[in-house]
Image (tube, rainbow, N blue to C red; front, side, top):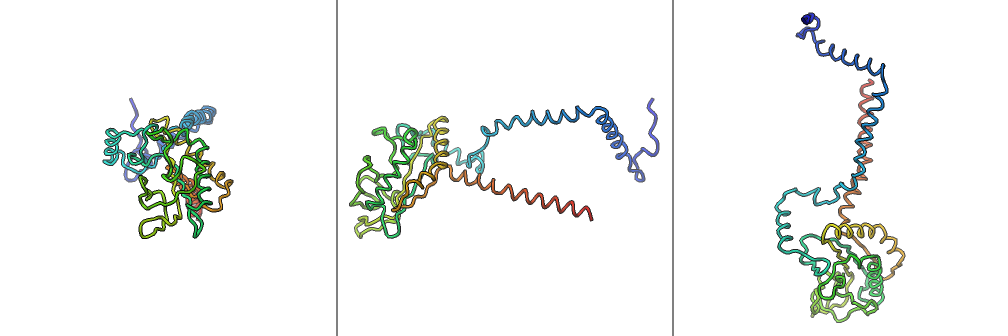
Length: 287
């Protein structure tokens, strides 16, 4: 029969050792076990940490890199309505691409060519550099993944003014915003016109290079091309040595990469904050 606890071990208002004493005995036993056989307590945490850290191998595959998934409700009504549009109005980027039918922003690389002050992108010198810029993008693997038209199966034109022949002269006798069957409201910027709508000059021209997103494989290939474009295009642009135009660019991944860059830039600041907090706590306890 178990012996009753002594008066010193019972909890009361005058005796608070009833919690401290069992814990002290427990840790004394644990310390004796570690001192008697230390290797299991050394190796087991290492093996356990190594086994659990093996999951980091799959981190790149499971990493959330979609800004929409990160900052929008999971079952929001906007997503449900977009799914409805995608189900009843499907797109076919590889055969019948139409930018106006896209339910999302799409996968694209956008370039804006801006002429020098007082000049126009429709001038012969600036236009020849625009054609060189277009050729540089097309020869970098874009035509393999480009969104294609239904008429001739060719890549969707990044700008309605770009001709099929890369040696063609700059278009003349344009009207704005509509010129024949083409709408130039989103193609030209900084437009100066005559009273009748005739284009006199245009300071900027926008090029939109859309990529295929039909299926996971096409979307992954387009994303990979955009990532390599952002890495390689700055050096290619510097080597072209444009004098009549200045080029700015962004892609459908630019916003996501900007958020990721902000996260990486903030981490050192958090580390400094934690270091100062811990240092202040230690110094305060030493007083």
